[in-house]
Amino acid sequence: MGVGRWVMYVNVVFAVPALIGALLLLAKPVITKEPQLAIPGIVVVSAALFAVVYGFAHVESTSWTNPVALGSMIVGAALLGPPACTTRTRASPRS
Image (cartoon, rainbow, N blue to C red; front, side, top):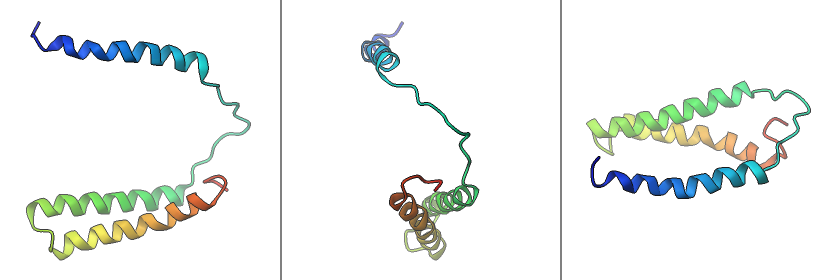
C-alpha cells in the first residue's frame, strides 16, 4: 500500500457520523401524489446547457471571439433565463 493512500481514509471519519445522523434526523417525506415531469422545461434547460457546454468546448479549438462560441454561450444563457425566473417566482416548479 502506498504511503499516501491512508489519507483517503480520513473521509470515513466524517462520512460515517454524517450517514448515521442523516438516517436518524432527516424526515422521510410523505408523497401524496406522483410527481410529474415538466417536459417543456426539461427540453429548454437541456438545450441551454448543451449550448453553453458546446460554446466552452468550441473555445478550446478556436478563440473567445469566435462567433460560434460566443453565440452558443449567449443563446444558452438566454435560454436559461425564463426557466430560472419562473422557478424562482412560483411556489412549486410544477405549478
